[in-house]
Length: 346
Image 1 (cartoon, rainbow, N blue to C red):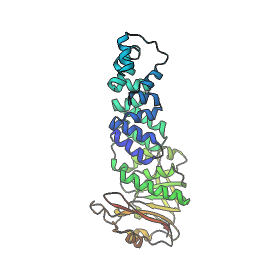
Image 2: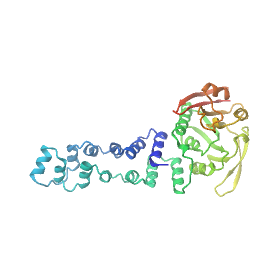
Image 3: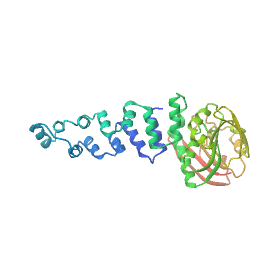
């Protein structure tokens, strides 16, 4: 992923942290006001962006003034900034920043060295270090590992639509205050929803992510390594979700040394945010015991060939997922399509 794409996704993931928006605007638009928000240097902002002479004098208040009377006249009567800096000869970076908008000088003055490497040099290592400083998350673990090891993955897992849909689910569950307990994430892909849940305020015992595609396993484990090491709160299983026995399921989990261990679990909660991909959905849904907490999403995006089970409306989706007690149901317009979500007890 490009740096601007990563910053855009973090801005969506963590809207409460304004530094992601500020660095994105600085990187994409060279919006220097965003840099001064990041470093919290108001006098520098006024001096460089507004060309404010009062701020310049406050910044150099302890410097010796030299030069001739003509420069003094121009600096004071004409507000000539070039003459002003000839009177202040030992402030070359400030001069270049104010009179030339010199990017390197601006970064040197603000001492924002990691930000400089990100913005001017496209340095991914500085980006990852900076991301950790803002928010310590397993998503950064995954991106850093994939970049270091040159592992390719489908960037659509972090598309705006995917993130907005997952954030919506998490916000609803946090507001509802439900304990999802032992959770099976069906068609979990790279398990990013699992990592987001485990780093949220949602009460959750552990998450097992099932996906039929074997290429997802390594990437899911990379993005969830810290949760795997945390008493196996995350597990990935390569298995067809139609083979899951929701009343009590035995499955193999591969350890880091290549060995496998059999585990038996009965889920309290089943999550499937890819219902549009599930052929014979009614048969799959009928396998779930009464009382299971179900968290399902689908959409009306028929244009994708793999979307074989879309719903035109929330009502149509509700008829496909009957529940004894509904905790939440709603829809979100994501531009290209509408996303539908239902949460409740079967």
